[in-house]
Image (tube, rainbow, N blue to C red):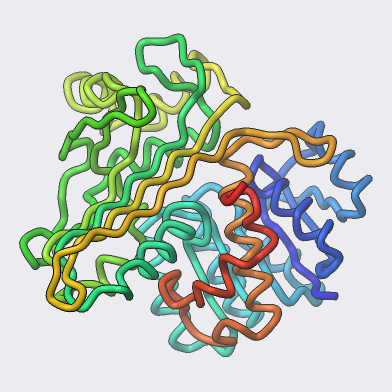
Length: 359
């Protein structure tokens, strides 16, 4: 049985803890800054709960000094660098869920000198979407267009934004704020967040999609020089993008994200009634013929046993648990930096941790 410590007991960290502990392959310890109501439920499942100030570098260093082989960082993205440095000193295998491009680039440099494995961005997008898109690309002799579209949506929104909070508000606003990797007319470039607006209809419901950062992971780097156009866009209900542009640009909240985060947390309701929509499209040449291959998934919130999980919990935690499990079986490189696109697709999709994607 492998020993793993999870830093952060929010919705995704706690879900991953339950999944890994239930598999009987891992002994799980989870750490957070303060006691939470759901910690008792974690302890009943056999998970060790520690209360420590994991925003403090020296405390993280002490917490990690207990013989753990694996670390899953499920903390807010702004704590990533300190955690990465502490893990590198201990030569533990590191995994995270972050869409933050800055910390992913930092990991690349750290991993060059490490004997352990660093695998960032192991969630839904990047993560499942990156691995699936890369697999589709392998069918083609020549690539033309690769489109990644992902949305974590509220089933019944009742506000002007047509959105309720189902995961980290800080992470949400971060991906709306930074330039986005893309390939346009064969050239790697950066495109602006909240731009590239498009509309589409799925099962009678109208949606919009627009550029957001981080979700493309390392796919743009991997396909640079091999594809004409590649982009990642977030799916929302129509009208959401315009209001976010008004807040960020007209009202200037792009320069005061902490205040906007506070406003969102105080005034926009959270929900456990969500649905995840994934659409991946690849167009190119196969044996000289122009063809298109697509993958789509709709994953609702649902009961697992006698416990309810949101769609974002199941998809994000399920993906990182699958990657950790594959690493423990020796099916992923045991040292250095590993991109999501390097994870073996056939082994990955057979993981029981991904059952929720295929129901």
